[in-house]
Length: 518
Image (cartoon, rainbow, N blue to C red; front, side, top):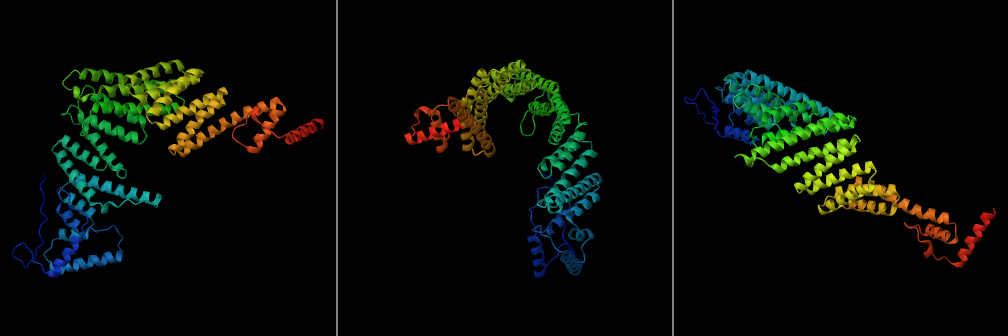
């Protein structure tokens, strides 16, 4: 438990002891001040000035006019001067200065000059970023740092502890305190503060040798995440590679119980995949395939390593299924890269590996992805019959597992294949299934897309019958066309089933003969 510092008592020269007896008016004043406190005290050591300053924090972040602030300050000064002439300057400053300034003063008074320098720079940057965001967005409503005393308390508590440990060269303790700050500020608004302390942790971790490199490995992981979130994937990959290398053969875990080596492998493969996606967008197929082959090799090595650990007393930390799944995922994206590069045979071989892994793991969803990707390769090769077989398997798996989007994709692909082959009736059937599914899940964008496909297929289907009637050039076909134009139904009626009255048929024939003579 951290020692707490006594706040001290207000003293008067008229009292021999250090206790002040206050009357009812004074009691009411301090009762009002205590009611203005918003947040309960944190379970950590607070300096004297900041403890006093917290007592005057406002209950609400409302804007107080400057004239009212000046009047309030003058009233407090006058009251203190009349009733408590024995107050020290620092006690008066606790009421006069802002909470941030009191934290700065306390750091300097206690000799934490490095902590003050870092804290002051962070508060200045905080204000600048907040002002820039306010100018860009009228709806931006993040509170000023001054109105968040808990954050100021965390700055003081951990920065000063880190500086004390650094003076004694307890670098592991320095790392722990800086990492605690990074975790505390790990939210969407304060992510830049988290990143600042991640960088500080990385620098400190370089000099920690007592733990065999665990802190350095963790720091590389944090830096990789920092660069990955910023979109700097090459830099992220470098840090994740170092993270993976340092954790190989180790059974280290993080504070949540995750195995660091597995976390490093997952992060590295994810970054490689994101890099390959960018390369494929730029049509850099060879580079994308090269980096995905590297990802597959890492996944296989990881599986071999964990198979070895499985025969040791530490077997409980390994999950062979997870290793196989990572290998399968790497194979899947490698197969897609070969497909994009036009290397169809290689793509089929790699995707076949992914399908076997998915079958071994009894993973239907992954198997469906493997079948869908295989169907795309076969479709590119012109093997439509084989592609249709795989797509029907995808539809069955998606239906059984309630994967509506997968079902829509497979139905749309089947509709496209049949539409290209001129089988418009079957195309309409599959497009209709896709359309109804998107309507059921209320996916407006997909519903509009499938509706267009369905409409085109229906138009093609109707066009076949229209063309057939026109090419026949007989009375029955003509009757069929006229009947369809009158009803405007979505299907052309069968010419053999159309019955037109004799008078109407005679009129039609007269019109036809007249046009022929003209």
